[in-house]
Image (cartoon, rainbow, N blue to C red; front, side, top):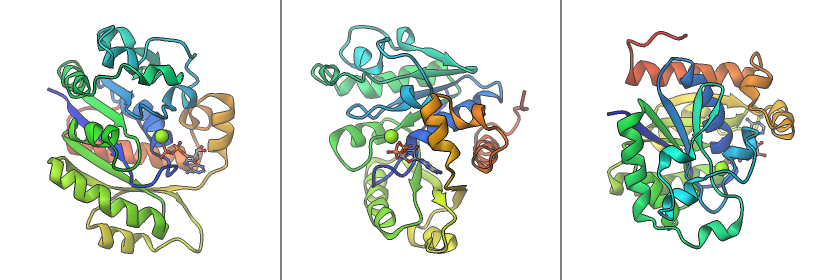
Length: 241
Ligand SMILES: Nc1ncnc2c1ncn2[C@@H]1O[C@H](COP(=O)(O)OP(=O)(O)O)[C@@H](O)[C@H]1O
Ligand SMILES: [Mg+2]
């Protein structure tokens, strides 16, 4: 059985999808069977960030019972990706009960299953969080992000999903809440501190994850560090390719 980890946040726009897209590619380089799933059913964006062409089979088709999840796989640089449907009509036939079963299916076939969560505490977020064994919290070093994150922590604890740590994204301003303070407030270890980086906007425009477009950028190197940390935790024996 593989391990499932959801990337969640209280507030939207903190960088979950950007992190999941790039981290997925970094993890797949360890020659682990890795899949990333766009669990943000109302606002999927992994396909856009990864430059995957639209109008392909999606998680929405899986959750409406039309197809099995293996028919919704796309490969990006050695990583399997399950995208979301961009058209709003895709939301009409969703059976939320299939979400957990789909993640269970993937845990049987993959060593790492990463789920990109919607923000907030709505039904879609709760289903995504409760379907995974573990969670990584993503915040920006701002009070608005931290205060919402505290709610996500409470929900994850109630749902029995283990929170393994926090990633601080868009860091580097002199007005950042000190990172150690964030760790203290959330009572979580820091898994990574990712800088605010304009290259991410360029990567989005070009439809190519920044780890492929600019592998030597600080953001890309920090993502590799996070991947190494996660690997150490879950599969300490696997060498990088
Ligand atoms: N480290 C960063 N530096 C600069 N821009 C970033 C960074 N991380 C994310 N972004 C940008 O912030 C916006 C929100 O990121 P996204 O990954 O979609 O967040 P979420 O999935 O949490 O809603 C996007 O425009 C993205 O390109
Ligand atoms: Mg997102």
